[in-house]
Amino acid sequence: MAPRPRPRSLGKVANVTTANTIKGIYEVLDDRFVTGRCTNGDGRLEVLHDGSRWAEGPLYVPAWRQLIWSDIPNDRILRWDEPTGTVGVLRTPAGNSNGNTLDREGRLISCEQGNRRVTRTEHDGSVTVLADRYDGKRLNSPNDAVVRSDGSVWFSDPDFGILSDYEGHRAESEIGACHVYRLDPGTGEVRLAADGFDGPNGVVFSPDERQLYVSDSRAARIRVFDVRDDGTLTDGRTFAEAKNGVHFDNIRFDDEGRLWAAALDDGVHCYDPDGTLIGRLLVPERVSNITFGGPKNNRLFITASTSLYALMMSVTGAPRIQRHR
Image 1 (spheres, rainbow, N blue to C red):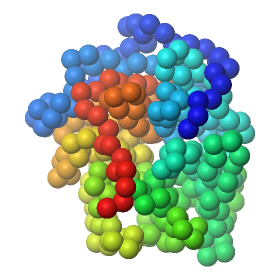
Image 2 (cartoon, rainbow, N blue to C red):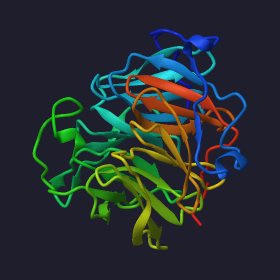
Image 3 (tube, rainbow, N blue to C red):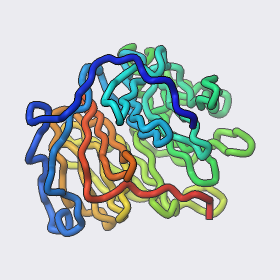
Image 4 (cartoon, helix red, strand yellow):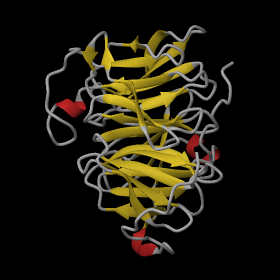
């Protein structure tokens, strides 16, 4: 992806000090959280920006050295420039975009829940609609997406964006249910990948792409499916369940196969590959989404309520498979 012009400055947070740093953010629930290098000696949660109305969909774009994220009610995508610390507007209006990811050619894939569609931003800046219907009916409000190494786009489609006008446009669901879909890279056909959700949200593949993990916000659980060679899913089961009114949002893997989950009012959860909750990151706002990024992929970016946070990690995000096996 070619570098874009420097964003219009909306403010800058530079030379982070204790005024915008939160210390003591770790809660160790299992020794593996420490022995697995999930904590570091620095432990500083940096506030990179505040002023969003509801921050979501963080994505680190290596070619730009920028972190972009959605400010859903304000209908814009913002970007934070890593070398300068400046923040600017990437796009507005943005269709009340939620989740963002990159395809295999470095193009931006966005879930526009207000427009009820999944789009791709081409290198020339034009926008291509990838999916807006299933079986002839309008999608609900696409929430999060992930691109597999074969080029297929997988996305969740809850009804969150059609429940009110706050983060989209109030409307009735034409499909009548909330599913996860797969967009075929060859034909462009939208196929049902998995059903049986109350509110599917975050989607992510295991580091080897043999499993797909889906957070179900309303059901307060994370489900996992095996991926067959033909791209269909099988053996859906529960990987983790939240307790005490906690609900999951986005999920991400690190390089050791641990799953990190945005848990709204309960910070960021860290799960061992066996499903054990081993630790938490305590964040002062409601955590909506997380992503790894930075030149070494060892910086955890967190969107929470009105703010964008960052934490330098001793672990790195799981690398992408370059080619489908």
